[in-house]
Image (cartoon, rainbow, N blue to C red; front, side):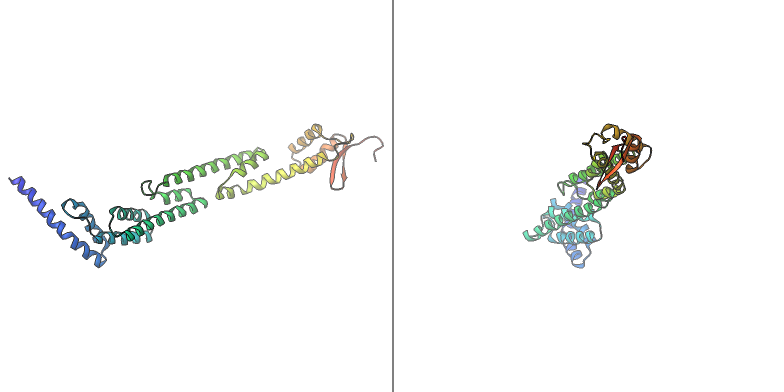
Length: 272
């Protein structure tokens, strides 16, 4: 009997407190005491089995507090409270739609902030910004985080590869890798390598043009023989033009200027 009496007393106290909560909740909302309002609202939600659901004041407090948290930069807490507000189903159709629109707007703003941070090269901060967007509250949030990480790592590895190719003077492969960089921050990091590669390729093209001028004549030194000599001179540290002059001279020729073109012509008896 004593046990039944204790249970009855507890139930009676809970019933009495549940009857007091709506008034306290309303008073806290009117006074702007959002912390007390939220506290009473949570207690009332826990006691729903005793009677009616939480009144409109609970939705009002959650709505106000969510805005305060968002403006203070506490995005995770703001999204959580706004989600609770929507799930409660309190308010008329218009206010519920406004609550859903506000949540969607905040989520979109977080995604945009994360993308800006990502483009600026701060992957860690971008992922941290996205962390409040759980898959349950924001479908696709995990996919976006995964995409950012995949893009970052691909560009990072590509940049490391570019440095190796430049050191090995594999210019065309390096240029191809440079063109594969698709992240602004990594493109900026590779700016000096791009300048080096483009300069080297321009010099190689100039050398090839010198080698190809006048190839139709039998007195012209060209082809593999000249290519080998030029490469040997380049390996010795000469710049492309000097390498061409040295290779031509080594093979018994002389560089002849023909307007804008130049070629290596073999020196024969009677040559001027």
